[in-house]
Length: 81
Image 1 (cartoon, rainbow, N blue to C red):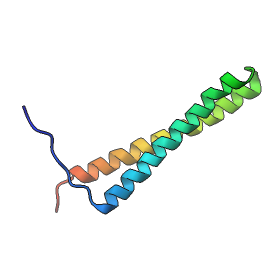
Image 2: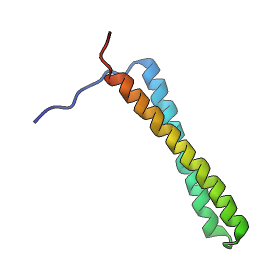
Image 3: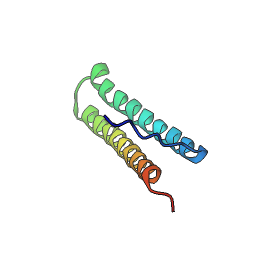
């Protein structure tokens, strides 16, 4: 059994991690808002349009957060020059 690799986190990486966490949090909040539309109103064309817009914004934030996280991990795992 191998042990997990410990990667030290420097201040810049901590700032980046905080930014990524904020992106995920914002995506979750937007998604909550989108789905709450169905709980609070009738399902007419305007509601579907609003849902689609808010859900798309949530999806974009989540994609941005995932890409940023993957980039941060790649940098952390890259061998030092």
